[in-house]
Image 1 (cartoon, rainbow, N blue to C red):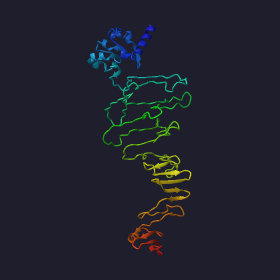
Image 2 (image 1 turned 180 degrees about the horizontal axis):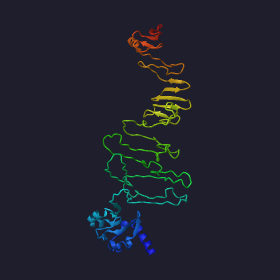
Image 3 (image 1 turned 120 degrees about the horizontal axis):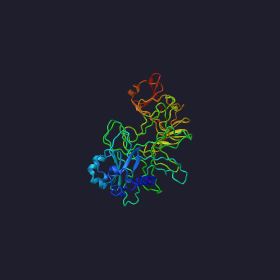
Image 4 (image 1 turned 90 degrees about the vertical axis):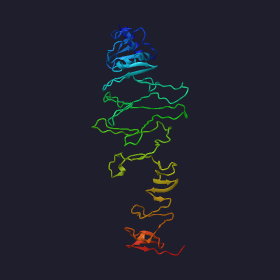
Length: 424
């Protein structure tokens, strides 16, 4: 009897592998349901802690069937008994069929927290001791698509998940794939210290051509919709929260884009292509953790640059600002020309004309003791009426009287003409 059970178990284990080639109209099963439950081809196996039997569909004669069975049928037999098949078996059983050469697994059952249609439980117990083996040798599920023998090379989807949802209720989660990697609370109980890095999803593409083999996209997120929305369409959302409500949690980096060695580099680390009507980068909701909100020296930077890096304001990269860490000088360039240098040592140095228009007053903003003008200082002409209508004039203000063509200065409560000498 034990040897018979081993043979039955081996046959049932190979059943799905040879399913497209097997004919379930052979002589192994000739009996009805009550008899076939004890036959070798209908051997009992354990699925989800319940008995599930493999049956031949063409041997089913009774309309009263036992639930929670696994039915294996061929597509031609399914067509011959289509009415009974749809009415009877989809209601409570799992159907494994040979659908024109592909294995099809279906079940029409909707119970809260029900077992999945396919459950892969891979218990990994042995360590990998052979150093020549790849770190990716252990796979609970492996899908391989080889396109080398195609006569033409159109884009393909090796794994295609389609989730159709018409649910309602607001922001309820509907996901085509819901993937979690969990480190259980007793993971450190063995005393071996911190564990390996935990990835919920690890995606990668490899180009082994050594040249321009074609573009590479490790991850692509697409969204299709029409019309405007009220801030409900977010292409990618990264959320972080504490697992235990009574404890605080901190992530050292929100989003990291980097390289594994210094020989690799980016053309642009992050690039946005498209119109925006709010902001290219929005940090309004970001809350810097300052020790003192009134002391900006204690606040972390909203934008953090390495030393001697610059911020460009043009596609030609010729209008920019940067800080020289060697000279301790902050510089501004416009169209490739130096406009302004600011330094705690030498003060501010303008390389082009500086003009003050209107009634703007420069007061207590220049801390250097002297102002040196290496080029011409221009005082634009102002009418006598506008000069006299200046609000709150102070001693030392100078203006160019457009009516008399002479400079005037405000001293002792009145505007006074400055006597000019003869022409040059």
